[in-house]
Structure formats: structure tokens, C-alpha cells
Length: 167
Image: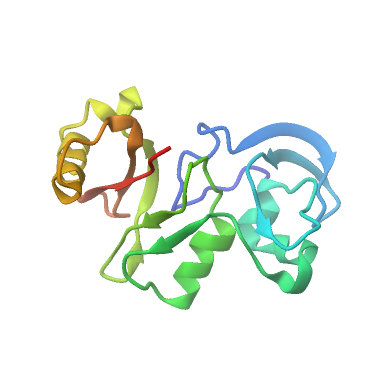
């Protein structure tokens, strides 16, 4: 089993500090985490103490929460994806730090991949990201600082969308 699985809807999860290296036992599988999840799990108490990247990827987190009901994000979708894709985003895609609930963009039934925040140097220099932030600013009726923009891209990589996360 891969100790460092890839997450298609959050491809840079390890670079975004969603995980830390750890030998702590995973609450779901009992094995050393290797990559321990560092963000919040939205579930009824008690929240699991340590969850590994493997158990996020395969959905085994459900074993550790009441009735298997949890989410790794405090979000809604701007369009409804299929139940399977919604579950992949909500329960098998590592969360990232936000100040408020946010809208996860969906195009043609497919959720977009989270790339980071508009203020990230590697993103802000991209014309597609600048354009997505400009569209968001227009939708909001004024300027939007890049640090309030979360950047998403279609899985095919041809459309970028910015959503808002005000603190």
C-alpha cells in the first residue's frame, strides 16, 4: 500500500502542510501514520486523534467516527457533482485551512482541483489565476485581494476558478 497517496482534487496536499511525517499509530488502520493528517475532521466527537494519508485516500476514516459521518471540508458545491465525486471531495480529499465555509467549484459535474491561495507566488504569476481572481472581483462588485482567493482548476487543466475565503 502506498504511504503517500495522490489526491486528484488536492494534488499539492503534502506541500500545503496537510500532513506531517509521524510514526504515531493511525486511529483507523493501527499502522504508523507515516504521513499524519494535520487538519480538522468535521465529525461528531470524539474526533480521531491521528489519521494517516492512506486512510484518507481509501475512506477508512469512516471507521473512527460515529456512523461514519464526517467531512474533511466545511464547504458546499456550486453545482451538484455525483454522489461518488462529492464523497471523494468531502471524505477522501485532504482539507486545507480556511476561515469560513466556502464554495467548491464544479464544472460539467466534476469538482475542480484545489491548487492553493491566490497569494501563492507560484499561482499569482499565472495569467489564468490573475484572470480568475479578476472574475471573482467582478462577481463580488469590487476588488478582491489575492490572499482571499482560493484557486481551483479543472482536472483537464484548462479552466481556473477563484472562490472567496474572507477572514
